[in-house]
Length: 253
Image 1 (cartoon, helix red, strand yellow):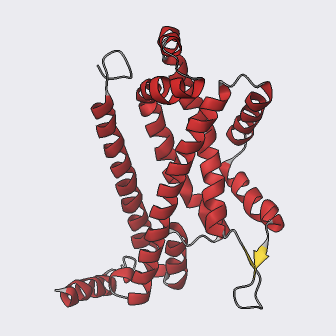
Image 2 (tube, rainbow, N blue to C red; image 1 turned 135 degrees about the vertical axis):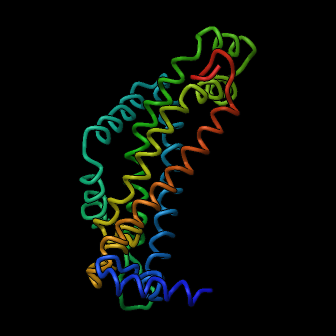
């Protein structure tokens, strides 16, 4: 069966030279696609998780009684919201990367402790996290003040009020906007190509550089993969939104 599959795409390449699906009949190209898909999924998952954590912590810090802490959070938001994510990625990797410590695994070659993959995760997580902070802040402000006062009257601390009362309600309000931001984040991970992270776009470019006849098929593969990744995220978030819906909170009654 596998041989028939390979033969089909070999024949397709011969009959239609501009549609050479080389990754379906050449092992080295297939391995590139698998590696690229692995890094794309890993980047997406890591950035989604870390950006949500940053958003939750930042939204809580925005309500802090400390002016210094609030100013730090506001400065972070303004910096990452008002500069292009591509420029941020280059700044983290080429500028801050020069100051990171190095280690030598073999006693000769010096390698930075944070790789290009690590910098991509850090940069993109901080970028999306800045938007998530504002998303969660808006959700928190949608929770009635009387609800907070009721929790405080029961002896809840500020942190307990946030984690056990306010945030669970605010999260339901935030889900539609959070969904949109995380979708944009997954699409933005393609910019890691600029610092040679071997994600799917990077691997696709290397394939069509070696085999120009494979350009159209690899571009088609990119579209299909990202439609699939975004579709899985949107489907999961929509189901989560329906499962958590409470009448009077969020967009669903």
